[in-house]
Length: 272
Picture 1 (cartoon, one colour):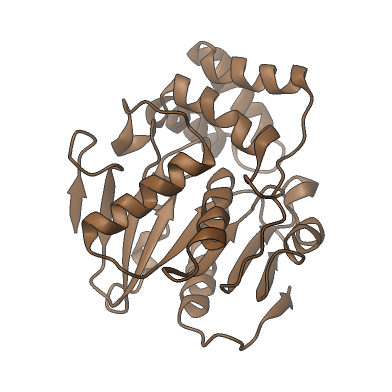
Picture 2 (cartoon, rainbow, N blue to C red):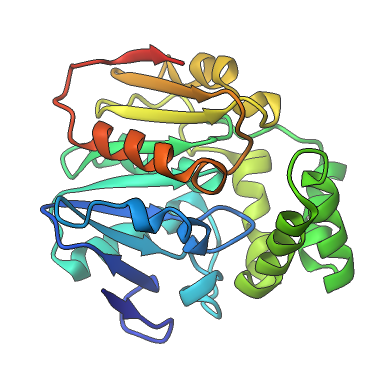
């Protein structure tokens, strides 16, 4: 296991897990760095895969790194990390907002990005929120700790334990630079992919939580991604929300690893 600090020459701070021949970059969501995957790591097969858990600018090992906080910038950072690691081919796993980064990479670098997994992905064109909602989300990211914590606890309290919601709120405060969190809002709330209709030739697996917000459930994801993807599989987890890797880690790992080693053209389509 190797760790690169945020001050290294590499564009994204990361941690390597495993030594296998299949190379995979795993990215974080809006609320947290890739420590979201900590509970799933014991189930990873490090003999077949090498996972680079990469924190986007402003998160985790990449805290303090400024930028435009756009899909294009994040995609360039992932490729720069792969270059630094000597990975000519890779798979990419995106979660929530970073699903857009994964899809953008697949659109423009099919010769290099061989497979993509998107977990609870937003719509390719973004959520299409109005100006007031966009600014409210940005303001929340920049708010004081008590306000941010309260908002996160309220969002998840209806389903998950109070201990988990408090933990999640604390991780957001610890993992994300407020300016970065505010900057990334436009990525998923308004902007989406630079080309929301751009074709994707590489195989894509989407994992949805059916207790998630409606735009990220199976039906919506299938409708939004099918026109883009030549080879799409959608796996819906019935009693899971926005965090499959935390709510159902062994199964989430199994789904990802099986998909990454599946031959192209097999078992594609919709699954539930």
